[in-house]
Amino acid sequence: MQVQPYLFFGGRCEEALEFYKKALGAEVEEMFRFKESPEPPPADTMPSHWGDKVMHANVRIGETQVMASDGCPEEQSAFKNFALSISAANEAETNRLFDALAEGGQVQMPLGKTFWSPRFGMVTDKFGLCWMVGVVEHSA
Image (cartoon, rainbow, N blue to C red; front, side):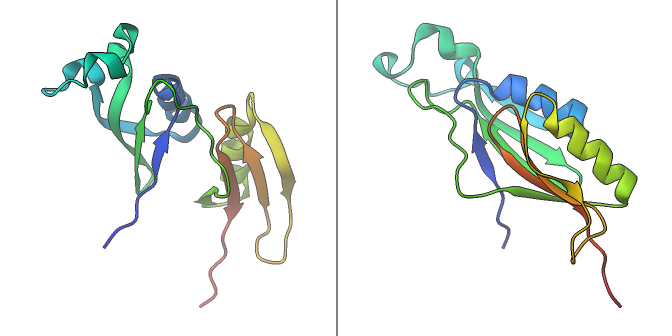
């Protein structure tokens, strides 16, 4: 069994995917637009300009598969009560990822030493998604 995050960006999915490509090295493996659906939604549920929006995307970030969509036109993205956690290989990589995600976002917990990590911080990116970034040291 796998649990995979499915993120809804309220009309900003393509912009978010481009941001995560640059910030995290994300790779879009598959993407479908609403206009490409073989079963289009009823005309009264989707504005005509919504056809180019992302209906579904599969994205690989490191070893993790994440799914994403613009959602529905009347929905706004509201990422509340959860965060995505990134385990970086070292402190330099932690700094790079954190700084990239912080661009246009808001730092919730500045990078620093904690009892569980030599470098850890929390940031909400410009799309409202909270990230926890840190070096995870494994004991033998």
